[in-house]
Amino acid sequence: MTSKRLSLLDASFLYGESGATMMHVAGMSLYQIPEDAPPDMLRRIVEEFWAVPKVYPPFNYRLASPDFLKNPRHRWIEEDEVDLAYHVRRSALPAPGDERELGILVSRLHSNQMDFHRPPWEMHIIEGLEGNRFAIYFKMHHSLIDGITGMKMMVRSLSEDPLNQTILPLFATPPSKRASRKSTDGNDFMTALTGTMESVRLQLGTAKDIGKAMLTVGKAIRGKDSLTIPFQAPNSILNGRITRGRRFATQQFELSRIKALSKKAGGSLNDIVLAMCSGAIRRFLLEMNELPAKPLIAMIPVNVRPADDPGGGNAVGVMLASLATDIADPAERLRAILDSAQRAKDHLQGMSRQAIMGYSALIMSPFSVQLTTGVSGRVRPAFNVVISNVPGPTKPLYFRGAELLATYPLSIPLHGQAFNITLQSYADTLNFGYVGCSKTVPHLQKMALYTVEALEELEAALG
Image (cartoon, rainbow, N blue to C red; front, side, top):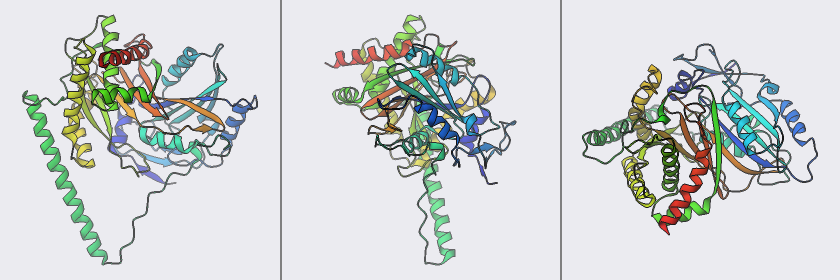
C-alpha cells in the first residue's frame, strides 16, 4: 500500500477542521436532460458509477490517521477498494423541484462533515429539478484538492461532444502525467551539482523578493504606502463566530456584459467583480444597519500554478484590496476599488511563484494564528471577505448527452469569515456561488439579488 506525505498547506486544512468549521469545498453543476433520454437515465448512470472497477488518485486517498486531524505527519494512503455506493449518491427534490428547493438541499449537504475514515469526497446526483434538469453536487476536502485542480478534473469527465456516452467519471479517470525530465548524457555529479546551485539561486532570489515585499508592508503600516494590508479591516457581522449550518445561493451573469463594463472602466473583469460584490455587500449590511464606517477589505486568492501543471494539492498566493463600501456613489466606489486592486497587483508584479507563495504565507500568518488559537470571530479580522474567481471551461460541455448549463462553486465559511463568494466562468457565463453561516449571516440569498442590482448601478453610472 503506497502513501504520500501531505504538504504543510494541505495539512493546515485538516488542522482547522471542526464541527463548525468544516474544511471542504464543493461544486454544484446544472444539466439539461436530453429530450430522447430514457426515464431511468440517472439511475442507470449511478449504477454504472457504482460498478467502476478502479478509482484513481486522489479519489482513492484516505488519511493514515483519521482520528487525529491535528497530526503534523499526515499521510495519504491509497485504498485498493473504494466503496462507491457510499461516495456516489442519488437524491431527489420534493415537488415542484425549483431553484429554492435545490438551494435548501445543497445547503444541507454542505453542512455535513466528511468521514475521514474514507477518501474525503462525495458525489450527489440530484433529480427532480423542474424544466427536465438535474444537478450534481460534488464535495471534496480542501486538503485533497484545490479549486483549480477540481475544475480540471471536472472538465476531464465531461465532453464537447453531446453524443459521447462513454467518457469516464472524474474519479475513474487516470491523472495527467507530468512530462518526464529528459535524461542527461553528462556527468551525474555535475548534473546534481548544477541542480543544487540552481536551487540555492532560486531560494536566495525568493528571499530577496519576499524581503522587498515586506519592506513595502512596513511602509503601509506606517501610513507611507497605499497598499492594503491585514488588519486594516473593520469589525463586521461577516466576521463573527459560526455554527454548523450553511446557506448557499447562486447567480449567473453573461460574461460579455461584465467584460464590456470592464473595458469602459479601464480595469479588469476581476475589478468589476469586486465592485459588484462591494455594492451587494454594502446594501446587505445597510439594510441590517450593520455597515461599518471604514471600508471592508477583500482577500483575493491568486493562482500561481503553472499552466501545464496537472494539479494536486494547493498552490495559491493572496492579495488584499479595499471594497470601498464606505462610498455611496457607485462610480466613485469603483474608482477606489480599481486603485486599491492595481496597487495590490503592482506589489506582486515581478515576484516568482515561490516568492508569491512565501510572501502570502507571511502576511496570512496572523490570520492562521487566529484560526489555530481559536480567537477568530472574537478579535479584529485580518480581512472581511474572501472573493475568489476560478477560471472554467470556455466551450459548452456535456455529461452523457446532458448539456452543462452552469457550474457554481461552494467554499468554506470559518470563524471570523462567516461568508464568502466564489465565482467560476463557463462558456459565455460567469457563475457566482455565495456560501455563509445560516445563523451568523441570515437571509444570505438576498446577496445574489443585490449583486444583479449592483451591476445595473455600475452600468448606469458608466453610461
